[in-house]
Length: 243
Image (cartoon, rainbow, N blue to C red; front, side, top):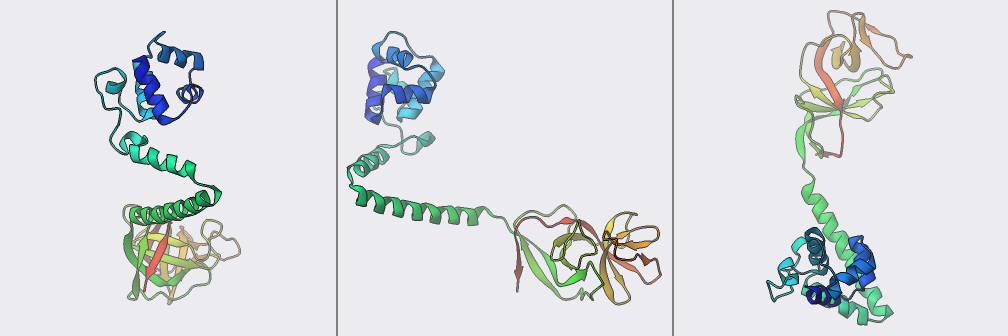
């Protein structure tokens, strides 16, 4: 075993001290593994094999092939080590060119992977903002589609963009909100309301529709107010509006 451990380390081209540091043991302890003074524990043997790109079977003499399959457990394959040796023989200019190419390729692959893993959840989106201020009309028949990168909460029926400052500090102008269609709300819940040709985002209270910004007066209860939905949160993540 001692000779196999030494062979695996030397094939990797690293010193006893470096490998000992990686294993978080003393160099004298690792030296004992290579001289046969004592054997490593099973978990340490596994770590040596993984770091050196070989197998436990090779280290203990049960296999003659020191190589692991390419990319297994993230260790260096034969081809990867050959690339490293070639890189070391390059001059400064050659290394700079390789570094540039590798960096650009890594950025390209990273961008592609990020694009692949971003899920898009599609919901109706109303491009005309509901008013969180003085009130603007909302044409509920004119909906586009919002593609969301973060899964909306259960119950979301459509996405709405608000305008104005009456719901600050909780909601700011330009924020997107998740809305669940409903005609009834409990007191102190925030909803989307239609009143006298205008659409508002307000808190529903026993007195009427309340703004969080105290500079706005309450809209007193009247028979013409109609609830269009319940606001169940602020949209998170990326929002893309399909034209």
